[in-house]
Length: 265
Image 1 (cartoon, rainbow, N blue to C red):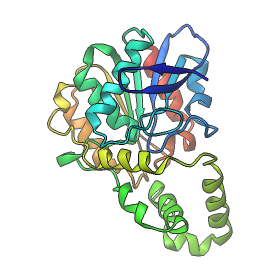
Image 2 (image 1 turned 90 degrees about the vertical axis):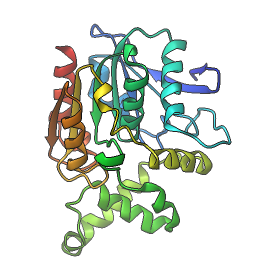
Image 3 (image 1 turned 180 degrees about the vertical axis):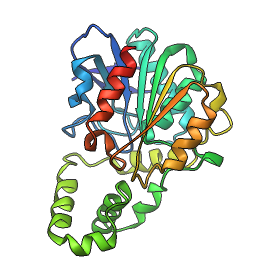
């Protein structure tokens, strides 16, 4: 078990074998727990980079302070983690909530990042917020599961469900089985409330390093218009959309190919 202690936390992390393209820090999304497999450490990225990822505060096997969490703290956690591992200036990839953390990290600690990949994420504020997942916590487990599936991919409408009852049931079973380790409830709520307040919309011009923006065409969590706002306000960015929803990274094989190609340039 790999744990590293920062000033505030004991952080659980994983890293793959060294590769000729060097290290890549991957910051995962809401409720992320590296014990749930498959995950980012199983992605094609590990074949080209020394892939490094960690459980964020309040989740997985990382410390769960009983306090209000802020996006600044999440960025500070990432920076402290990088310092403790003595990581050089390196590319960073942030997905969904991890993309929000990566925005804060890039603004607060620009010298730590050589290139930045932001996938299915939002700036918050006037750039649009991602779907308010904290509101789903009021729903019963079955309803929350169904809502999550629908907002992940807007092609899954009520009309589609009526026509594809068997596929819908299988999709629910698959979605439920992917979570072997459920998030710590207080830690998850603290994360969701920090996520609710995320807003980099007025500071995106401070992000100067090369940025690859990736979105899913049918994403109901981080809609296309939110990705387009990021593109307009980060002058050093390139925006691409893929066939899929919030999970386009596993729905469209071209997405990882584009990341690898772009990072290797």
